[in-house]
Length: 121
Image 1 (cartoon, rainbow, N blue to C red):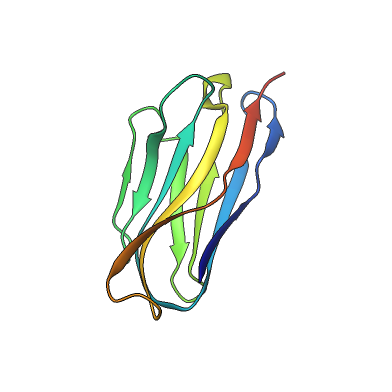
Image 2: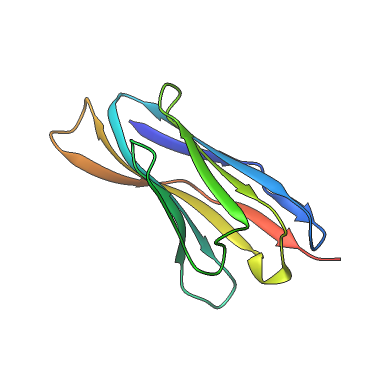
């Protein structure tokens, strides 16, 4: 059984910073691409950032230059450092991972439960 658990969300003032963490646990054989998505009220879920096992990253235009995605392969963790936060960054942030587990025969895609980020004065 594979589980993704996010942490680090909360309430922050505009211009502030937060760091999100996501830990993958369970019978994991290998972790591939790790991503952060977000979903604001009344809007579709959107990709925020992604990082390959080798460290190649990509970002949505709306967060480029403000957010940084990183990972720790030894711990099966992914992070999202969010700086210069704006009210429009308010959303539930979800961790999403492609991985192989010992229990399955192929690649699987897994989601965390989400963590709320609210940017407001």
